[in-house]
Length: 384
Image (spheres, rainbow, N blue to C red):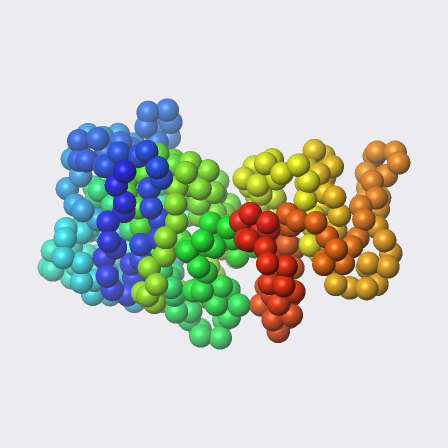
């Protein structure tokens, strides 16, 4: 089993994703296309330069690393993004594979300008894309950038420049930034169910082409689809492991036009619940939901009927909720309607699914949890 190679060091590369167990080392002669052999080639879009899905099979991998860059109306950030590629100090062979997803701004002119600069220092640049009236989405653009690339390893770089990260503006998403930078190695897998999303952010991903092909393409559903979260879930489900370089190597920009804002909170919630059921709840005979309030009750209602029957109790610290004694699932068609006991957290029985937001109570919740001497990933998982 081959680990992912060390990422190109500099301002825009990290090394978080690693191949799963049992995957042989990638070699140029066995470098399959992400969609082959089961996915038929998609119909061509009008006026579009597009690599055939078999390209990665037909050609040897010519570079060690391909930097993968999807672009859509990114003129405000492309100069900084491409400058970071230029300033890498990786000593091996590297290329930049760009796929322009119907940009209507000045992105193409900027890309062509930087293509000259990058190739002058030995970084090959491949620019593909289409100019259809509508973009096909981030997942589609990433997949096409991979197909037209030739590297043994793939380093994903969004044009919204995003390892540990430095947020820009500095005051934006403070709790999220603390979370992403301070997870322990073990928590990179145990906290994959939280609302924050992947425990290593998409712009820092680095993995072998063979592992990417094993996991499969990004979802190409377009706007509103959390393609990075779905790929991350597939990675974990297929036995992939997760690592983080504990250096701040990326500038991760927050702005209102980011594609992530098009994904509805309810969409993310539903994917998280199904992933939690598949990865954890199907292995438990019973469990307690920590939080008898709005989020805990919503989780209960979102579960499949079989998993709702496994909920032994809710637990909380709020005396008003505890005094009520139970939660009645009024929407249930069962008769009598299910009534779930509500207990103080010290009287509740693990394992727990915790629906309390972290880093919001001045350390009170964390102190209460630590008092129980439980093991994360065995006795409890965070969901919020």
